[in-house]
Image (cartoon, rainbow, N blue to C red; front, side):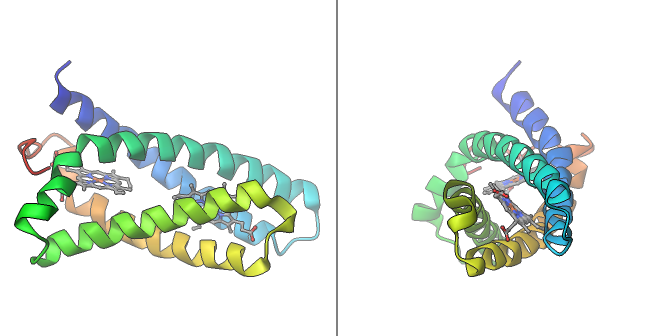
Amino acid sequence: MDKRKLNLWIDRALVPVFVGVIWTGLELHAARHVADPLFGHRWSVSHTVVSLLFLLLAGTHVYGHWGWYRALTTVGCKDRHRRMVLLFSLVFLLAAVTGLLLLLCGAGCALYLGKFHYLLGLIFGIMGLLHLLKRLRILFGIAKPRAAKNR
Ligand code: HEM
Ligand code: HEM
């Protein structure tokens, strides 16, 4: 399988895992307001497993588009489209780092970190949905993936 085809399959695999991250994240948020600790624990485990899988796939996706990030140093990011993708990447990075921090420090974590992560998660969800919808034709194989150069 050539690199472009492999990238397309990773893009496709990202969709259900992305939905899983949002879903388990929202359920975990709701569970934090319920007194039953077992209920919360289940969603905490599900969210952690799905998020780690998403990190793995998203890391491969970013690696596959590394040329796009490298091109920022030459073509810059003057157009709105590039700025949006860059902002989305930063929000993703922050959501991932705060999520991993929550995992590492567990119950000892300050409450505001959980709230900050949830807020970032919501922004990430909206931006991710826009990112995905703009590329739906590529995901369905109707439009061809763009050239590997600068991507
Ligand atoms: C939510 C799940 C995601 C899906 C379904 C998805 C899907 C896609 C698709 C179909 C493309 C176009 C591929 C091509 O033209 O060859 C693309 C491009 C790209 N994606 Fe994603 N992506 C996701 C998440 C992410 C994340 C989390 C990041 C960054 C951290 C990211 C960064 C990029 C970049 C830099 C490009 C190339 C620039 C562009 O096409 O505008 N994507 N993505
Ligand atoms: C980049 C993707 C994400 C990663 C890697 C990630 C990872 C994590 C991890 C590892 C935890 C700690 C689990 C625990 O120990 O209980 C966590 C907590 C949480 N996540 Fe995420 N997450 C992501 C996105 C999201 C999204 C999109 C949402 C919501 C829409 C969300 C909502 C939450 C909530 C509510 C908590 C509990 C916070 C607290 O302890 O108060 N996450 N996340």
